[in-house]
Every structure is written in C-alpha cells, then in structure tokens.
Length: 316
Image (cartoon, rainbow, N blue to C red):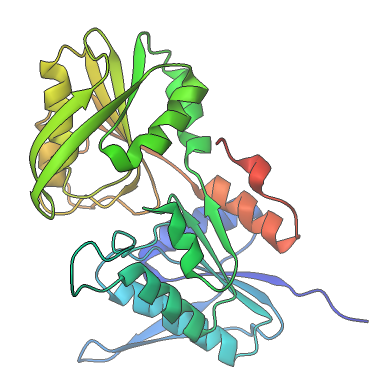
C-alpha cells in the first residue's frame, strides 16, 4: 500500500517571517534548513531533515538582489536530489516580472528566463500572487497557482465605509484590475495615463474620469520607488479629489519610496506582507497599512496538497 506523501514546509531567508505565519496557520512547524555562507559571498543551502517522498513547499519571495532567487533555485535542486516527491515553489512576490516582453530591441525577457530556471532546477509547481502581467503564467511548462490579493484587500476597503468612492488605475495596464475592484465595490473607475522619461521616472500624468468630490483609491500590483503613486495622488488632489489612498500588493519600496509616500497627498497606502518592510526606524511608515497574505497562502497550500479546487478562494 502506497504511503501518503507528507507535507513539509521550508523557508528561505528573505521570507522567513511570512513562512512562519503560513506554518502557524497550517498548524505545522517549519522544516529545519540552514545556509552555509563562504567568505567570498557564495552560499549553500541545505535541509537538516529528510524530505524523501515528501511534498515540499519552499517559501521565498524573489525581489533583488538575485541572491533571493538563486537561494530558492538551490533549495529546489537540493530537495529534488534528496528524493522529494514534489517540490513546489511558493513565491509571494515573483521578481523580474516587469520583464515580460521585448519592449525595445536587444533586451532579455527576464520573467521567461526565471520560469526556465525554476523548471531546470526541478520545480514541479509555482504559487505566486498578483503577477505584474497575467500572461507570465504561460511562460511555465508546469502548473501555476495565481493568487489574487483582492480577497484580502476588498473586505478591508469595504470596512472603511468610504462615501463617494472611486477606484483609479495608475496606467492603462492596470485598468483590468481597477475595473474588478470597482465592480465589487460598485463604484466608478478612473484611468490615469502616464508618460515616462525613463525607468522609475514619470514625466507627466493625466486622469480620465470624474475626480472632483471623490474619495479615490489607486490600485496596483506593486509600489517600487512610489514616484508614479505620489505624482498620481498629487494630480488627483489638484483635480478636486477629497482624499487619495493607494492599494498595492507588493511593497518593493526601493530608493526614496518611504519619503515620497510620507510627503505626498496620499492618506493611506495599503499593502500586503509578500515583501517585508524596511527595519530602518528612520523610515516613515505612518501612512502604510500592512495586511497579511499568509492565511490566504496557507489555504491555497492546503487545497493544492489535498487536490482541491482553489478558484472559490478568490474575489475576481
């Protein structure tokens, strides 16, 4: 008689706190693992317990530096070589997703390369949240469970009981997401149009839709330098918005992001914990509200392990 493949949960270093919350929700302990670091910066992760025959879930977000991605790849390879039954990469934030196409000559498609590397390492499945572009799922030759943070954000937004609410997309690419939020909240949509001078530098923003007298929430998949977000909030306020909030799944918060948010017209920035916030006490986080995705990921991990459908867990 075939034995059941035991579920085992492991965490890489960039997502240890998130993984502990997932494990607690599932009623499991995180598996024992370690990372040996050499003096030149090379590192070698290892499992300190058997994973033979187990269904192994490895939790790691992959924002830069590339060490985060490479640590995940090494962990997947180690699990496969240790005879794990299946290895599932749980990537709350899928880094390099903005490189989803050739937008100019002679550039890489980074998201496809990451998908190829995960496959080469021996990954059997990926779980991730709010990809920068939905079509990235097609880059993989194995199943992808695409989790939507709207199931966490929308109940919170509804609990605020905001009157004269409108949902804004920061650019044309975010119109689908904004429309989904607006449909659930039964409110109008505003589309912002931006032109960039170069990466992370926005030249100008205009807004299409009724702005005056509205309490606006800008929805996006991530906040990087917060340049677009801060500029959009200031433009919307100048156009007569009563208040402006933002809701974004992944708080990348690079460069001057914290300062830009603190000094902007934004009243609140709602994010998830797919990427941990800075530990620097000098960073002003007073406008930032963090909602956890750990319970959602724990639910999906449990359902995937038990071969249950997952679509009912989302708000689309």
